[in-house]
Length: 230
Image (cartoon, rainbow, N blue to C red):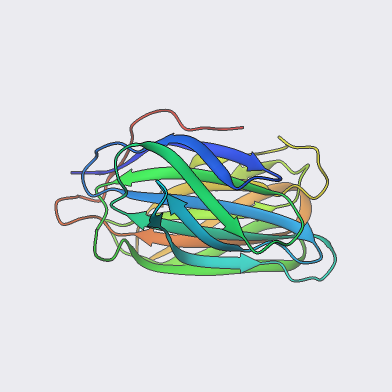
């Protein structure tokens, strides 16, 4: 059985923290993953909790935040839920109350280890402006590495050559403090570097996680439907 990504649900939110009517299938060994980019005025927002179907709580994998202490700082986060109920329901994200905008991508993965979904993770950020978002993670053959990359609005992001893009909010929003989120995957190896190129330099933050296949999974990735790209 291969690791399978089911088409994700993208949401850009200002005043509400709910991704409505998301569908989780009855796929085997499933994990629901929330990729997040948050922006703020001098201090980016932070997620304090994520809930699926009213009462099923996510676990935080990692968070990376730009901490330049000036306008339009950003952070990236990844949260996950093992064996979510297969249904159509809401995903509710609770934040710390800081001012700013945020963007989410909710994705189901099947064929994932149910005891330890992520082998490892890493975070990285750049407080000064740069044209490359990049980080390197220890992984393994058979794993699948995913990332959440966050930068500022009005940037065109190009995914790294070895990665497959799942979501890219390139230039989709005009609000100055709106974060732009990129999500992609790459086949696991002893060491995996993920990157995004920016057409204009910006501060950035990124989180990488190495998904482990279930015992029955070969670690190969199949996209069950077309990815969301905005």
